[in-house]
Image (cartoon, rainbow, N blue to C red; front, side, top):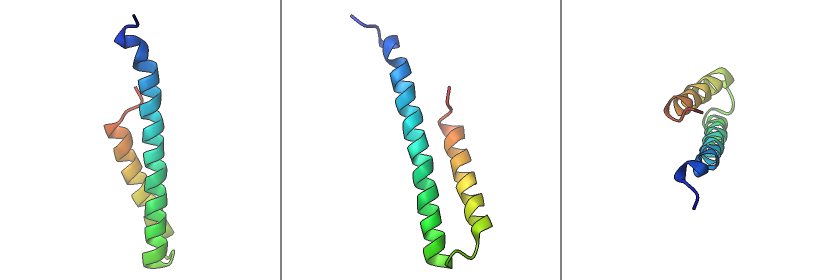
Length: 64
């Protein structure tokens, strides 16, 4: 019988993959919103918002 610890690397990899996908989704959603709402007029603000949200994801779902 396998111990629960043997599943940790797989679970960690899955969580990291989900975290990465969440950050990709954040980037896509914010970019689409800014393009639709502001016709791409504020690229720096768009990038700043993506960075702030992705930083929050990383703080709440650390890699280790």
